[in-house]
Image (cartoon, rainbow, N blue to C red):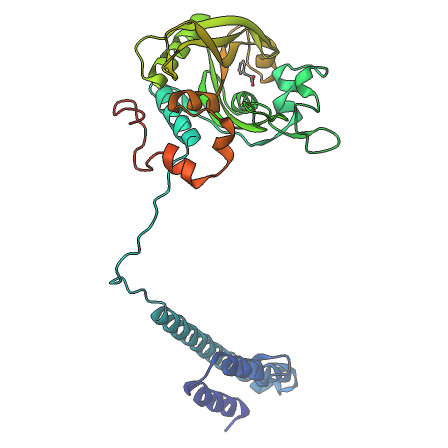
Length: 355
Ligand code: PHE
């Protein structure tokens, strides 16, 4: 019997036995390792007389393939057996009675964002998002905010590097830039999210929430802005009448700019929205500055529109009678189970936003 056939027969019978993974690997290296039996046969090819060389090489390759296939299928077999054994052990007994569990609640800020998104989706706005860590360009420069503008001050902005290139966004307005850079007009979007300013007292938290709005098209004017905000506030507070006033203001990225107050009244210690002579500021807005449009390659002689930025936390406090802003971020489970919302009650305009 030739050497080859001997090797073949010996190892085929070995591989037929019951083996574990390390035994198989041992066999594998005995055959195919650097000085393995099969490998050394290959080295022999050159020394064989020419008349027999071809047959030898062919036989060797056939045997090599046969043994390799056998080893591979043996490995599969052992691995599968191991997985099955593991799965068998991990079976879950679903006949056990359920344990009582506490159901989580939706945070009032998340609820408010969902409500606002639903309200705007009814009038054709889609939702965009941007990162909390922004670059200086999107947060300031592209928004026409000059180098010496007070908003850039270290006291207000959390910078993340010495060169002041990266920062925690101080408003959601950079999402205007991101949106306009990646698409072509018209734009009709809102962008809710977290924003950061170095500020902390009873009515200010270093992290707070805004929703940005942006509507750019041909012939959009301030009347559209007013109509849109009027609709938002009425829907959000679920009232028919709303008192709203626009106060002239200044933002580098809008011209003209305004701040919007809504009228309210205190009755028996409760706040009534839309009546009375008290005013509460809830948002900043204006017509997008031509320089901003130029920065994002939109032609301001063809397209224009409005933008606004609403403080979400304050709206949530007003609507849900929460009087301390800090409670939002305390993670007190008792507070959340009182003020939180049922996760299965998704706010929609037609079914009611909050029940
Ligand atoms: N970004 C402004 C702020 O945070 C709000 C704003 C947004 C004003 C869009 C005008 C237009 O105060």
